Length: 296
Image 1 (tube, rainbow, N blue to C red):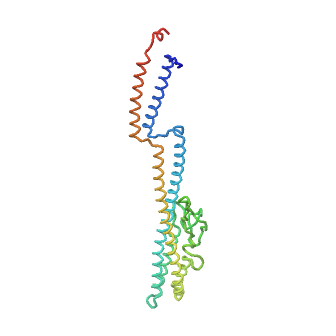
Image 2 (image 1 turned 180 degrees about the vertical axis):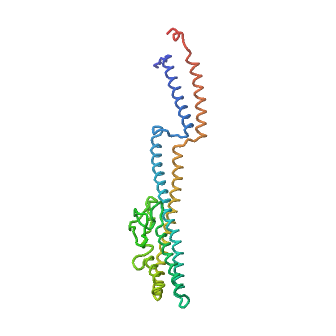
């Protein structure tokens, strides 16, 4: 025995309207996606993809920070590289002057005094090099809050603290070099050596040989530090490129999660519009108004 269900005009109208509302809602969603260019406009659109997108965005921000840190480190190390390269040229000039002053019989007192003046001028220039700064901070002064690493007398006024930059998930690079590491300390300090040379040219020419040995030792120290700065510079450059590449890859992942597929969405929109218009037409024909509707 079968049971027949009575279908009323009201139930047909309700079902038809629900279907039309659902179709209109889908049409509106597709139009919103096309206008915004995004599949995800709110977490409720797709909770799992929205959560994944949040994670990707967090990684992008982290990699962008690494890239900014690396660029700052490149500025620090690039300044040191230029300063030390210039400093070495000046030190070699001073050495040539010492060798000239040691040549017996080739120079008189006036010439020796002139050589002393040139060495002193190189010393003053090297002090300016030692006080090179990046963004207002002396690159050879550690973390000092002062404007210079060396006083006019050649005394180190910075500190021994390191300036580090985080350039990767597990990569931290030191981007400074303290003055004593580069220019030495005590009797082997470059500025002390140049001061002694300036005096010995006229007062004690016999000491120029020992002064030259000290100058050569100081030159080797500066050269070694220049090589170390160059190695760190190359590493930071590589980490900067790696961070930028990672940002590009993550941006692609985020686009796959959030951005709309234009050809697919346009096709779906056209189909949905056709479906909605057809549903409207059929509903209008099936649910004709009755005499009771007019009597109400």
